[in-house]
Image (cartoon, rainbow, N blue to C red; front, side):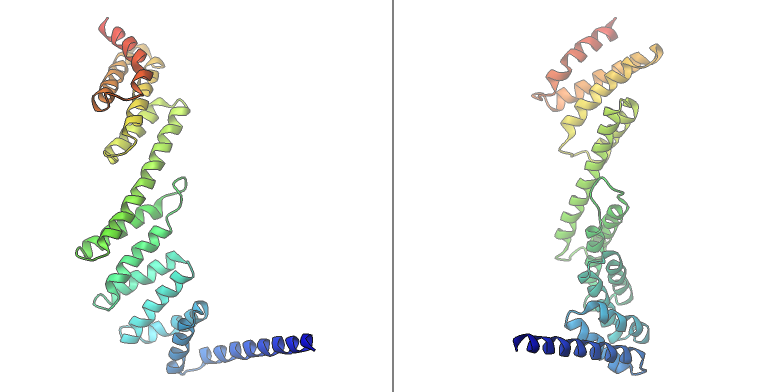
Length: 265
């Protein structure tokens, strides 16, 4: 008895879904924009974002530049955001900010456009184009809304993105070092210090620069060695000056003594 009841409930539910789909399809194909608008908004408010977008995509051009067009653009961006399609969400948030710059949600959309790019930023080992884009977008938001309550959050997100780029640069430099490509390692480490002068890895970077210059000199032709030995001493002195108690000094003290003697003779 209960099995039959359950079966009938299931069938009834499937029929209702089928009828509902047919009704939505019929509404989409109709020329009644008012009904389409109400149906799309209703679907959005029920959390059926994928189906709501079918109506929004038709209606945005119809109501472009109007109060309804503003709402549809905002809801379109929110729908893609809820569906975790951050690239497209960013596009529509930015479109809202540009088209309805005095709209109720202009500042919010300016931030969310940048935030979507932040969410789309991959782990440090992958291509970082979206990370650079997110940094530009976040800085653009700060420039556009310098007094916004969201500036602090935007700044925090930028710091997080820069830390990711810094980590990538450090890993690349270390890879060159381990591959014994010392010239490339030195260039990468020194570039990292130029780009991130306040890096927490400065002590370790200076240590590796010192060792890399020494090993680079050791593997150079005779005419190039002296210049690179002198760079070794310079790097060692930088490390010792900035971190006089560094544990890394004991690892390069012998190198320093050896190189100092070579340069002195």
